[in-house]
Image 1 (tube, rainbow, N blue to C red):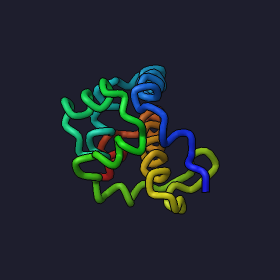
Image 2: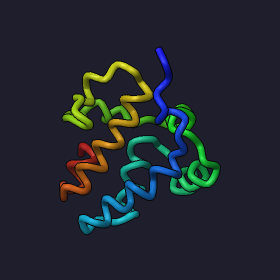
Image 3: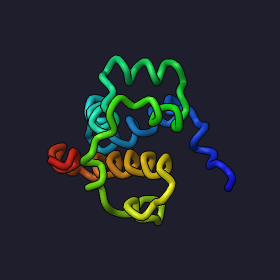
Image 4: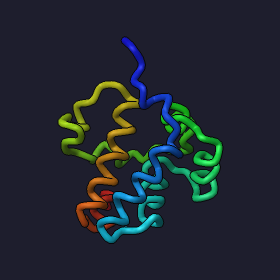
Amino acid sequence: MAEHKIYTMSVAKVYPHYVTKAEKKGRTKAEVDEIIRWLTGYSQEGLEAQLEEQKDFETFFAEAPRLNPSRSLIKGVICGVRVEDIEEPIMQEIRYLDKLIDELAKGKAMEKILRK
């Protein structure tokens, strides 16, 4: 099976779009960073280093210090596909992140986004 183009795309290229999407809805870059840190276990410094080094999505998730075990509680549809039904692990991680950013942009409370 051919690898998806997004796997080799730099997270740093997509990150500004996450921030813009959030800010258009009155949310903040700090909230986007908090979501990414919650999902991946990166510290703020670690996240910034990944972005600066232009790591691709596959490497970004492979090097994540601690993928949050509660991420399996993320349910719903993103890009017409249920995130809980995605079988490719990297694609599922990417879609988890997309879903969380969508929830942020839709005004959901951070404690609900972070599955507390």
